Structures are given as structure tokens and as C-alpha cells.
Image (cartoon, rainbow, N blue to C red; front, side):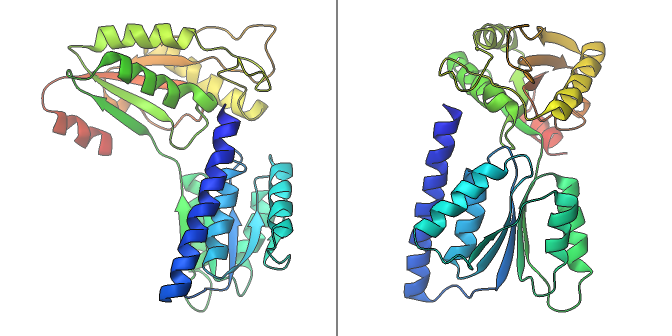
Length: 297
């Protein structure tokens, strides 16, 4: 299901930027920059890859596309489709390899007119510094990075609607979305009921092979991700109230991590983004604006 949604998102990107290109040709609102480097992530290997490339092409630029090293085949097939559709081979060139070598070399190339990057905040800062150190005109950087996404639920909310949104956002795609819910702030008047429903709904999710249509939560990206997420889970088990945690079934596919949820005392206890199916929950009362200020901080 997540894969089908991603294909649809990729199509949406293509249609959107095609429409933007037609409008710009009519109104002459865009001026091409030149060669643009597009560095995309593994978690949406088709949609984000295609969105970056389509945006650069639609504004008249040529593209040097560097997909994540974990997902080279998806990018290869995407570029083949673009070329088959009539995009000149020289206009979209695919360059595989690690970010620290191939990605860094592309950013450092003389003549690069722009960089589009989706990934971690530290890497985005590294790219920004590298571009700022270059001689000549300022090279634009468009960076979409991570964060701790929060949902604020007040006492008037419909619990069924809240729980559906929470489970979909926090646990689908195994929590491996930059848009995934990381922090649920729920009013104390309905917190017990909502938490109980989240627990029940999450336990109904099916873990396993994503080739199976019955699967709700597939594996995380690789063994390194498993190790990192498990370290965070162990830390939270020792410092927070465990609301949802269970071992991965022995017969399940490798790199599976079941949905987890922990109750924290305050928003500031959420120190960093965990890129996996791990939800933090905080109760609140009083002025909602104060809670929003804490989240923004």
C-alpha cells in the first residue's frame, strides 16, 4: 500500500511540474540556473527522486541526479522512463555512489548552479558550508531535512479520528518518513482513553514482508538502522513509561521493528528524531499556546 501511494506521489510531482512548466513558458516567470545537482534519500526512492528531477527540468535546467546508495535500482528505472518519454539523455544524468564521496564531489564541481537535497540536517549544513566556500556567484541550496513532528490534541477531538491519524503517521512506512509523527501531545482529559486506543490499534498492525498485501509495517532500511533505533528504544525503556513495546516475531522478515510508544513527562524530553516506528506521548493541560511554544522550542 505504501508503495502504491509513492508511485501516485511521483506521478503527482510530474503532473504538477509539467503544469508549472507550461505556465512559465507562457508568462516567462522562470530563468534556468544551469546544471543542478539533485541528491535524494532512500525512504522515498521514487517520489522524492522524481520530484527533485522534475522540478529542475521544468525550470529549464540540466540535472545531475545522485540517488541514495541504498536504492540505486529504483532511480535507474526512473531515469530510463524519463529518457523513454523523450527527456534527452544529456539533460538527466544518473550518478551512483555514497554521499560522502560522489555527493560531495558533485557539490564541489565548478559550474554547478544549484543543489537540491533531501536528508539529514547535519548533511544539509555540510552542503551549505561547501557551497558558501566556493568562489563566484552564490549557489542556491534547497534542503528538506528532518525534525520532530508533533500533533497537538485538545479535549474536543474525536478519539477515533485522532488514533487513525496517529497510527497512520507514526507507524506506516515503519516510521521512516520525514513527515512521520514523532510526538503526540494529548490533553489530560482524554489522554487515558486515546492512549488505550492507540495501544489497541497498533497491536493490530501486521509486521512482515512488504510484498504481502496484508503487511502494514515492513522492515526498516538496514541493519545499521535497526541497531540505532534499538539503542533509542532501550534508552526510552529505562527513562520513560513504556506504553507499547513487544518483540519482533521470530518468523518475520529481517530488520523488522514493531511499533513502540513511550510516555514522557515533558516535551523537552524528546531530544532527537528517531527515524523509525517509535512514538513519544506527552500529556498537557492549561494554555495550548504554551504547549505549542514548547514544541517550537
